[in-house]
Image (tube, one colour):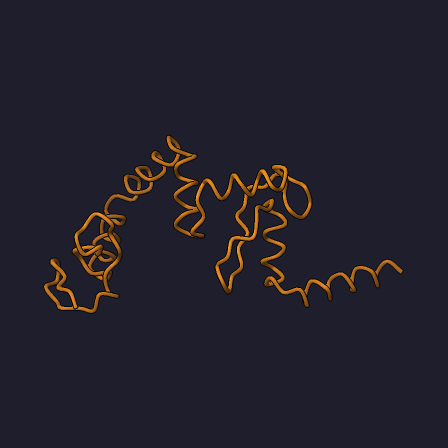
Length: 144
């Protein structure tokens, strides 16, 4: 249990977002209080909120992409570079520009780098070999 310094309520640790800088690795305010304050700030200053983050991303595109990959997929820059070298800096499926991290949605395991089109296509087929096989059969049957 942890006490939110904003609302003063004692809440389970799951009610707090992580923060690596704090001693207990949790934010001081609970998620509900933080969301309330953030939505009020965004409502009062929508341009300032969007612009601040957008400016940082524009100034730091590589760092922004690196942080996104680490946060969203748990993949380091080194792992991405090693995979790109292994794949010859091409999409693992079509040979196009590999801009997307491909991962197993069940296990979270990093599988490789794909172009946006191939990554979206796999996602559309829910990473299901069975559905992909049905799509192949459908296409082959439609050819005559």
